[in-house]
Image 1 (cartoon, rainbow, N blue to C red):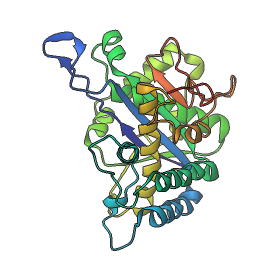
Image 2: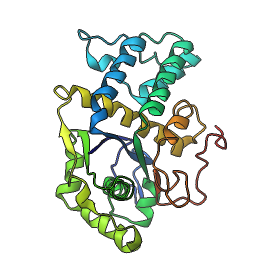
Image 3: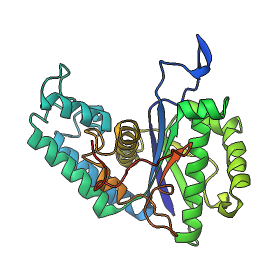
Image 4: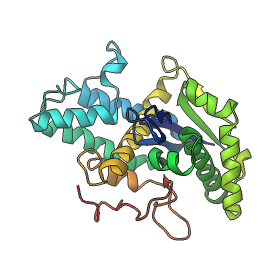
Length: 291
C-alpha cells in the first residue's frame, strides 16, 4: 500500500474580475499547485521520526513546544532566507535560524531526506489565468485533482502492480467539495476522452483523500510537511523560474524524485504537470534553469 500525502500552494479561487468578467480577478494567485509525496506504508514511521529528528536538531522542536512554531513550510523557509540575505524588513520565520549557514544546513537535511526516502512525487501546476480564458467556468482545484489521480493510478498500475493507494491530507472543506459536486469525476472523464490510451484504473486509489486530524495523526502531519515543500517549490518555479531564489534550494532534490515518464524519461509532463500546457515548456532541469 502506498500513502500519498498531499498539500497545496496558492489559491484555487477562479473568480472573475468584477470590472472585466472576461479575465481572472486581480486579487487571486496566478497559479494553483497541488502536490503529492508517496511512500510505502512501512516507511510511515521511520520517515516521520526522521523529520522530527531534523526539526529537533535544527529548529529546537520539543514535546513541550508548540508544534506550529517549528512546522516546516516552504514559504517560511523563503521568508527566512530573504530576511537573512538583508535588505528586507520581515523577520526570519524561525527563531533558531539566525544566519545563512544554519539555514543552509537545514535545507541540506531536507534535500537528503528526499534522497534517502525517495518518495514517489507528483506536482500539478494550474495556470489559472490561461485556464480561465480557455475553459471558463472550470475548477482549478478539480483539474489539479483530476491530473493527480490519473498520474497516481497509472503509476500504481504500471510500476507497482498489485498495490493500491490512499491520499492523506489535512481536513479541507473546499477540497471535499471537489468530490461531492462531481467536478473531479467530470474532469477525469474529459481527460480520458482526450487521451484514451492513458485511461487509468481509479479503483487502485481510495475514491477521496483520508482527511486527518493533525492533533491526533502526529506521524502524518510530519510527512505532509514534505508535500508543502514540494508544492511551494513548484509554485515558485512556475511563477518565477526553477532557478529562482525560492525554488533553487530544494528543486534539484525534488525533481530527482518526481515520477518519470516511462517512455521518454524525465519528469516533465509526468511527475510535473502544467495545465494548460505551456509553449514553450519551462526549463526545469537545474543544470539549464537560471534565476
